[in-house]
Image 1: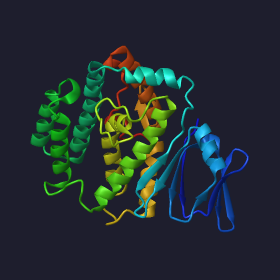
Image 2: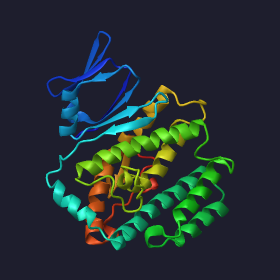
Image 3: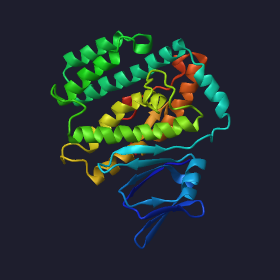
Image 4: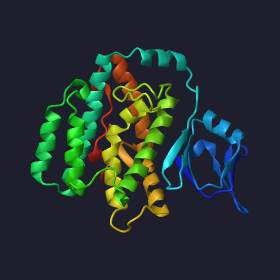
Length: 302
């Protein structure tokens, strides 16, 4: 099973070589079997990539992420049409009812909020604010029509980083979260496409300018896990997001989480999560959705 995320900084050329990714950098050559790779992340503005390699990336369900001058992912190249019953799955997806989507969204977003509360408790946030978030979650309704998620997020970030903090601040914590969430999004997009789903058709997100509405829906429970990872591994030593820090964030995808009593990587758990999501929404049974729980991530060995 594929497990590697290949991060290329200032490579000269990427090409296909006998079912391997060949990376040329000056006079050096590096080879990685395509069968080992889930995603390739490219930084820098000097790297060239061949169309033959890009074709093979698609055929092997490997995502390609392009970063900008600030090292943030800004583009995703995804496989197209590799799922064997693609049309059948898309027709079903287009027929999901508002009731189906609302019920499953209630479960998805509750997982996110529960994980936010668990992380806030782990960091030592005062009990009063934890209880406030718990009260908000207790009022969650189908489809989250009263936006409990937004209210919990406000209390969550205020509690962790202070009331003056906003997600638009130019700070290392925001830079880390932006990079981390973009990696999560890219990995989830690859898996969503690999399961024959259309990324634009979400269950809650429905922005006409967003090509990844469903991806943004399904990655929600994982965001607080990334927050924990960043808190544990990156904060406190630098006031900028270094190259080493970006590599550390990427390692998150191979960290272990316990799911249904089995240890697996975050990347593999996403595959299990999407599979369970398809079962849950088509059966109109939110209990079938896999539970992604922070406590099953904290303390697990790589």
